[in-house]
Length: 218
Image (tube, rainbow, N blue to C red; front, side, top):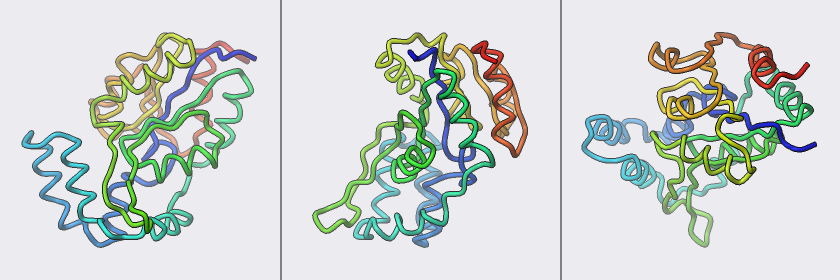
C-alpha cells in the first residue's frame, strides 16, 4: 500500500513520559545545576541552540555512552497504547516519524520499539573507547518544520498530507506547516492555540479519532 500521508510525532512528553531527554541525562549524571547557566543564556538570546547543546554535552565528556544506554532501558516509559496507535496508523497506509530536539539515543530506541518509520534527533558523539566527546545537532528548538519537510520530500508527499503531534513550543513550527496538528497535553496555552486540535489524555489511542477524521479512514 502506498503512503497516504505522514504523522510526525514529538518524542519527549508526547510518546514517552520523559519531559526532556537532556534533563533526564543531567539528573542521571548529576550535572543539572552546572547546566542551568547554559539554559539561562539560551533563553536570554545570548547563545543559539547549537551552542547550548555543545555546552551541555561538554558536562558529559568522558562518560561511557553505555552507562546512559543501560539506564534508558528502565527510563524510557511509553504513553499507554502508543504501540497500538502506531500499528493502526501503519495498517491504514500512513508513515510515521519521530522529530525530537532531544537526543537520538532516546529517539532511535523509541523508533525501534514502536516500529516507527523515521527518526530525527541530535546525536551524541563518542571517541574510540565509547566515551561521550561531542554532539551533532540536527534538530534545533525552532527548525522542526524544516526537518519534517525533508522527510515529506523523501516520501514524495506534500505538507498538506502531514499531521504533526506534539506538546511544547518547539513543536509549533511543525504545527504551522502541517495540514493537521494536534497539541497532545500541551504545556501551555500558546501551544494549544497553535494546533488544529487539542487533546488532553493519558491514552495515546485518543489521538486516533482526529487522525482518522483527517485522513478519512475507517
